[in-house]
Image 1: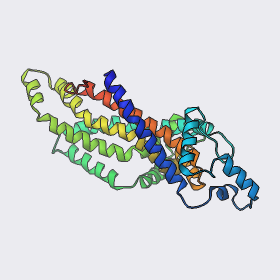
Image 2 (image 1 turned 60 degrees about the horizontal axis):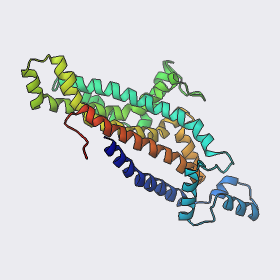
Image 3 (image 1 turned 45 degrees about the horizontal axis):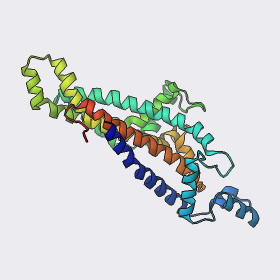
Image 4 (image 1 turned 90 degrees about the vertical axis):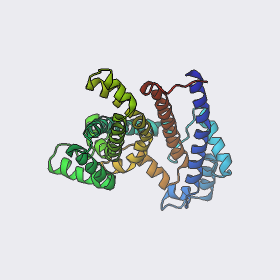
Length: 309
């Protein structure tokens, strides 16, 4: 297992550099002048423009800017915003909110999606199965922002069961409704994925063997069917953690959440490259660690999977 972890960590190094360089290149390839966006309608002097360009290394070639940024990153310097505020302070304010939202959405979609998918798979061809497929297809077809506005209007405004917008500190209970909106599409995919995997494993040889040995139906379903059916679901959940943090941009905009989404959007609009790349670098690390955890869970979920040198 240690050999496998070491190999996976080595594989993640080029992924990190490739992803951060790609984002850095795309941000600085956007049209417009970030210095002009910083001053707005005011007309700065040429000396002020040259000083800002030298401070943020904007007068250097792109590849030099990137390696200067990465060098500072490994020394603990995540850069500063155009307003002079350290990027670390911005991340410390935005990331906990988005992380709470993403974790809550992941828990909702995992618990509800696996349960409904399991019941639908066990009752394949019956009313519950058909209803689960129809509802999941509806959630996949409707855009997330439409679901967000509908729930905000109905649950938050008309019924008053939740706040239509989230307060500045974003406590856990206020994030439940945004988390439901954020998890809606992934929840539908997990239901369909779990349902098809359970239905397939019910006819597998190892399930028939376990039943022939006299094991109870609950033990067969819990130990043999569900455990083996969770392998593709866990794969999806590991990838989906990063997708939830990225997809939170729309949800945070609907519910006025001061998280990563709004911060990245504002940084992109003014061409604030170091801020965008710093946020993306942290998100890349989170996604890589989530995928590493998924690989480790494979061996526990499916005894047939073993990592050997």
